[in-house]
Image (cartoon, rainbow, N blue to C red; front, top):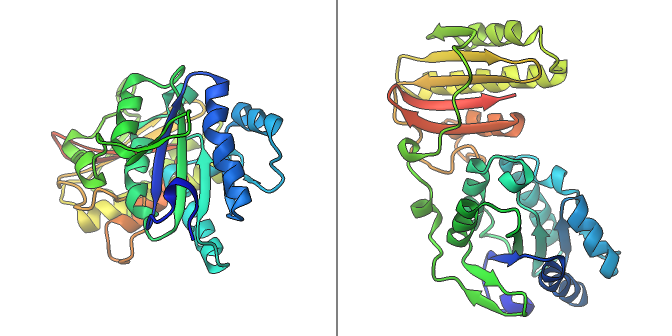
Length: 313
């Protein structure tokens, strides 16, 4: 049986909690972890160094699975894949509830929010098959207002530092929350024109162009080659599922590179594309999901030319 506030709940019990002091964070997190341990439930935490140290300082965490936050939340699609694999293992071992708490990246930590806001929405369905209780604490001292607004709209439940767990009347289901590609956030434009621009390149030509562009940079070879393959997947996806013309643009910097792949189409029908592994191998989501595993950042949006996939190495 499930314990605590999630008792009787089926699927993902997804909570947000807000705190403005270290004590308020501990009031949210410590009971959550200790009650899970007492119930014999798999209990996981994935915090950044400061919050991890804080929790370790006030409770016995020897029975908590501690995962470095920068590993678990490396990229949204990686986090979803890793959590789903861990949840499946625990359920196979007989767990009736798994508790997870962690720091979701956002601009307060120096990370882009667009794909993490999509993550917070998508996981409401991506984890629904598992008996998971997820607590997402957000520090109001460093979290921007627009992020806090998205957090409220992506969590069906709210955890209060005084111990209450309340239904969130402002929650919006994932499909309604996610904007169309035309309305999706766009990153800031790169300074200056691209160093290379190709029209309708094959995947092989695109790979070679990116390799040439990255050769003078300080990007280490293995990371560069992974990025080459991510661009190749995006180009192949555009040819197979998009509409002509296809345009590849490359911006090069000393230690990073940006590539945009634009086709004349409207973008994938599935707004979860990129974050969740596609079940259908012919789906447009397969190649983009692979790119999401590899790149430092991926954004997808619509502009006057069509559908754009922007990849950053």
